[in-house]
Structure formats: structure tokens, C-alpha cells
Image 1 (cartoon, helix red, strand yellow):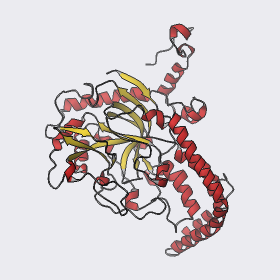
Image 2 (image 1 turned 90 degrees about the vertical axis):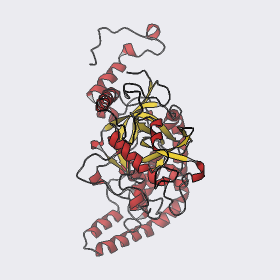
Image 3 (image 1 turned 90 degrees about the horizontal axis):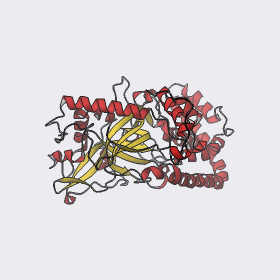
Image 4 (image 1 turned 135 degrees about the vertical axis):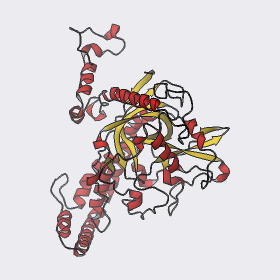
Length: 464
């Protein structure tokens, strides 16, 4: 295997994922009271309810080239900056950036930007790792993503028109500029593919590059998110107040009066159930509004303190150190939970990223183990990738990813640099063996094993 640098283990792991049968949209203003809707949005939907588990929620691994970065807060305004993850986008092996020059010049009906879905479909069809960008076979279809369903929107934004997105599986595309017979990174923000073409009312998104800026290729990528802590901190700070606004004792597990009301309403025949649920929601809000006004200074102080504390914590320990180590052009092996994100137009991703291994190759150049031939691979399928190469790439992917999966999870900053009980309980036998080896006295040296190390009493057992 090609030499690798130090493993990067992003410690931010705050979300869960849900089975597609358990997915729920954020309720509308007539389906639940505002406090209940906000609690679900903040403490459930944004912390994992929008992430549908793929492959049973197991971790997966990707190998490729970093083709785009999304800094914390990039493209977000106001409350949208509550999501403070650091993200990067990986062009999956064996493709390299310059392979996509094959799409220049854009063909009809494209203008100066190659149609992104066509490129994504080619990469999925002809690339041996393209399966990571699509939904695995499942008899139950994926739910409608937010941009199609109109939920949740930032408090009650209007429903997003369909536009050119492909539902429920759209994807990500990172724009690279064609000039001097090469593709160049111009720092265009990687975003959902349909955002390259569609402008919703209000113009929240940047317009795609105009024809006079030259020709552009949206590289098909797998989105990878290193989680920040701001949503988690905000949920922890606001949860007691949201319980009070619902008439509950903070932290209690019983239903609120509003939840009891909605449970009874749901048992009524249509359309009485709709009317009764609306009455329940209005009654909840009428009770909550005066309480919220009385608690407004405390609510604002708690939310603001959580916002700022999370940013400082992440800059020092979570996303800050990770972001400084990831650059466009890096060749990486990335491990993380494989999800489908309904929070946008629907795309697969690794979220949260749990480990990153940077390979010591020149920027944008894949090692021979994962790109067996030196000849250019045509992603359009004109040349295709030889079957022998595909088999070798898959075998390398499985071997490298298996070894990476044996590494224990990163230390939890909340545990004083150790592993949390939940992390220990979730570790595989292979991870436990590596973790035990790491914690043996003879492996606890800091400067050099000959200076501050020790010799074992007996030879350690072999890991393999």
C-alpha cells in the first residue's frame, strides 16, 4: 500500500440516522404547536431525523480525491448557520479530475455548464465505487426530501418548487473551470446539483456562472460531513424551555397536554381529525406565547451562550483542527456512516465522518493500487474501465477499508480524551483488539520507546 500520513479522526459525532420507514417531516403549524415543532426540528430532525440509514446504518468507506471544500457556515445565513459542520467532497476513484475534460465542450442543450446529472449517472454506471452515490436496492422507496416536500423550511419557508432536481436522489456537484485544456478549481462552493440551475423565490442561492465566464464541469462527488456541535449544544440549552412551553416538567418523559390532544384527534375520522389537530395546535400556541414572552430574556441568553460556546469548542477541538488538514487535491480514504440526507434535495453522504487517511501521493494523482493503468479513464464510457482493473480496484477498496475499520473511534472530548461508554459498547472485536494493544503499557510512550517506553512481561498476542 502507498504510504499514508497520520489518521485524522474527527471527534464530532452527534447525530443518528433513521430507517426509511421511521422518517418523519417536521410538522406544520396546524399539525403541532410551535414549541413541539421547534423541539422536533432542533432535537430530532436536525440531529439525525433527516438522515436515512443506508445499508442498515453501517459505516462505509470511500477512496478518492478531495474536489471541493465547504467551510463552516459557507452559504448559510442567520439561523441556517446553526448547522456548523465542516464538509468536503470526494471525487471517487478511479476517476481523476482531468478525466472530465472529456465533457468539454458542453453539448446541446447545455450552455456553458455541462448538465450535472448526466455526469453523475456516468460516474455511477462506469465507476466501481459509484454505488456510494445512489440508493442501494430496497423495497421501500426513500421519502420525499425537504426541497420537494417543503418541510421543514427555516421557520415555515414556502415549499421549494421541483425545478431540475431529480427526486428523491439528486446528489452533489462541484464546479471546476475549463481553461488551457485543463480543469481548474475556482473555489466554487460545492452544492446540490439542482442549485446549479434553479433559483428559488428570494434568490437564496448564488446564480450559476454566466456564459461569459467560460466553460464549467460539475464533478460528481460524494459529500462528507465532519459534524460540529452547535445543533447539539442548542438542543441541550433549549430543551428545558421547550418542555415548559409545552406544559411539561423539564426532562420528564410523559406526554404533554398537547401531545395527548393530538393523540385523541388522530383517532377521529377525516376531516374531523384535521380540524381537531388544528384546534390542538392553536390552543398549544395560545398557552405557550405568554410563557415564551415572559421567558424571552432567558431563552435568548441560553441560545446565544450555546451558539458561542459551540463555536469556540469546535474551533479548538472539533471541526477547526480537521479543516486545517484537508485540502483540495488530497487523495484520501474516508470512513463514516452512510446516509441519505433529506435536508436538501436528497443525496447520499458519509455523515458523520469518523476517520480520514491522507495518502502521500502528488495532488490529484491516485496511487497505482487504486488506478491500475496510467491511461486516462473516460467517464463517459467511451473507453470504459477494463474488468480486470475494476476487480483490482474493488479488492483494494475492500482491503484498505477493512483495515481502516479496525481502528477504534476517536476519543470523545467530553470524556477527558477517553472513549465514552457508548463508543466502547459499539466497538467490534477487531477494534477492541487494536484498542487494547494501544493501551498496553509498552505502547504508552510519548517521546521515544527507548526513552520513556517499557518492555512487556511477555510477547503480546498477534492481531491477525
